[in-house]
Amino acid sequence: MQNAERRLSAILCADVVGYSRLVRTDETGTLARLNEARSILHTAVEENGGRVFNLAGDGLLAEFPSAVAAVQAAAGSQDRLAVWAANQPDECRMDLRIGVNLADVVVDGNDLLGDGVNVAARLQALAEPGGVCISGAVYEQTRGRLALEFIEFDQQPLKNIADPIRVYALRSGVDPSVVGNIAVSGPATTGGTRRNPRRARVLRRLAGIVVIIALLLVINLLTTPHRIWIHWPALGMGAALVLSELRRWLWGHPWFSDRLPD
Image (cartoon, rainbow, N blue to C red; front, side, top):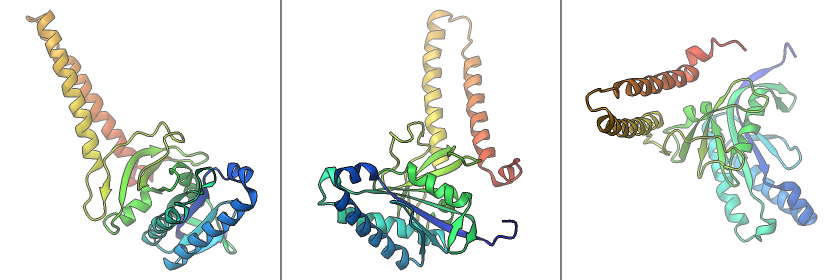
């Protein structure tokens, strides 16, 4: 596909949680609820200027002209789906996960292909039931423009995706049973007032180092009061913190990441 048409698009991927189990429990009812859920998604997609381009199994893929529109559709869909599913019995309640990515995609008729679409699907898998995960590219385009809360996570390696992706969770975060290795790297950020997650992470780590150094100082004074050795572990922990933050900055900086080999 050397001459394939390409374009920059925001991709929304939605998928039903535990669809196979729901079908085993109540096939007819599950198929009916799937159609209802898709109708809700279709409405939110169209209201925000998007289009559904693929319905695969219990999933849905939609394209938007902007990241803001895609996130609005994702959040609006989950709000409506939560109301719709509120009275459903627990054993057959239908929840969805949604992922949103912004990337260059390949146009194949009415369908879209490429890593940009695959990343949206991987982000969907990280979201908790009823939640939304977005990529760093989407967050950069939407921060300060939407009155929504995000939680930032460290860069995540995604299956069959070459480079790690910075992930942000909308609403209540990600399912720890799916990605137990994700560590929160910052507090929630809200709409127009954005807190600095990197600063918060550094301050937390710095506070931990201060506590450790204080304990070591007590040990130093109790065991060898005439020989001070506390400065060596203090320097080591400080250097480790600086190198760790430098690595994070280099890995996420566009100038550096653009020059990494594919």
